[in-house]
Every structure is written in C-alpha cells, then in structure tokens.
Length: 83
Image 1: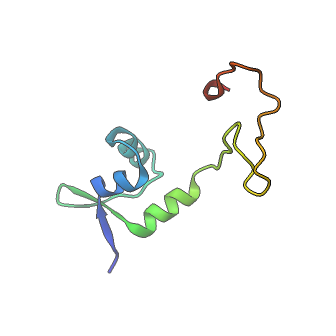
Image 2: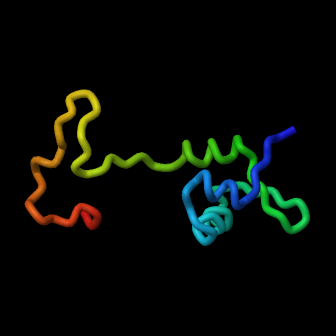
Image 3: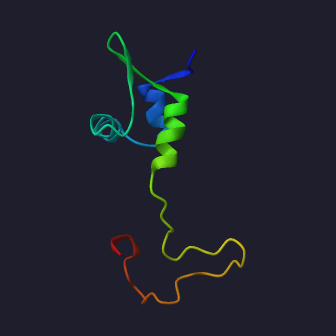
C-alpha cells in the first residue's frame, strides 16, 4: 500500500502555498489522488516531483569546498534577486 500524505502535509513538505500546489497539479507536474473530496499525494510522487525541479545556484553563494564567495563580478548595490 502506498504511503499517502494529505495535500496540506504535501504543501508543508514542499514549502509552497495552496495556489502553487494546485497550479502544479493542474499543469500535470504533480499527481494527486482523490479519495472522496480529500486530496492526497504519494510520498514517492513528492520525491519524484522534487527531483524533477531545475537546480539553480544562488548568485553570491560561497563555494562549499573553498569557502570563497562567487560574487567577484557583482557591482556594489546590485539587486541579486532581479538578475
């Protein structure tokens, strides 16, 4: 038998809100199981979904091995979030 979590538990684990959760479901990127009116997600599906997400490296992040910052090409005051 599959391990099911409620939609609310899945949203909490993923760190997303209700709108994003259902947007992903409607787009077919996240499989949801309904039992009556309640939505559930298999734990395997949550793992698959997270593994399918693109990986991004944060600008200005420190290299884990060297501990050196990667922000030498940034100008002072530049807004990193909009880059």
